[in-house]
Image (tube, rainbow, N blue to C red):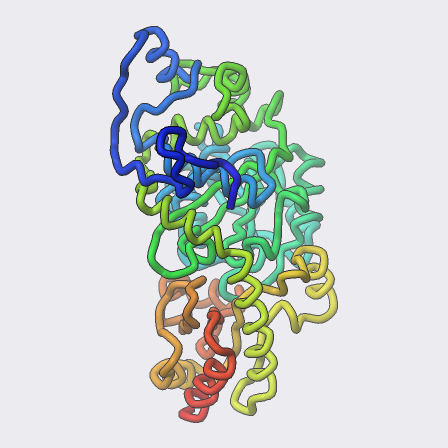
Length: 424
């Protein structure tokens, strides 16, 4: 609530102002202005690159996640895209070693869109960390996975993968969208964390945004697989990014994010709007309270589903046993719980569709992380473009239902579940 911004120096207002503008007057010494554009001094130039409201959000979330710094972008998809391509060498042949248990659009980003940019993806099993190690070669630019995967809830062994990455000089990039605060990847050794801030950070289903956090756990220096961090970068006048850190103050905490801001964000235009940044700042103020209630409600819902005769299986990290439970216990903070997402299976695709058509309180939307309880039939929505064999290999079947449990009275949620299940 207090990090990154205290008050307006002129009016003493304590709420972060909305700087709803695009450009900033370039007054004063022209040499200093040139230094700002050449990353030799801090300053505001254009809102596509940097904005005071957005910068307050970035500083504040870096503090929340105990990271070195963060970069806010237009959406979670933009955050994942920029985090990965920022590591690319610029030459065809780079590869990412990734978990197969991914959100549908992330799967498509990795396996189709990145392929068109010359970056291939190798799949490894998060339940067998050694498969990530075996897939690494001298062109691997990162390991990637979701801390708790959406929607099939497979936990990622963040600590073990971070150790493997350090051994080979490869950063671990994790998507922590479904478990902010419930997991702090920086404490487990992850190099970079991404978020769809649209979800729990916003908390109310109103605002698109993404965040990339540099956890300060990885050095790119001297690594041949990262030539754009170790030599002149023609995308910004032959700059050496680690040298540029010495010339700036506010933006001098992360060479990874400085490069991402001044090249990929600048050139793709994936900028977050100042008003969206303001709304995400509002969401941050209640995030700890909401996440605890989300998690508490989700545990009650998972227990109720487990007892229902028309539910074949329930997937919830708080119910896991064996090796998955060991990973969950190592990865999630029990002071919060085990997240707000529950997946369960009914008999088949027809039963899944009928369940969806009979919900009342719950909302049938493809979003997650709302204060309201949201329900989705993945094969009809988020994973409809994923080939069946790939989808089923990731644990998503015709009768799979994804619940994102809200903060309503939990008895009302359970009643609505029983109503919809009785229609099957």
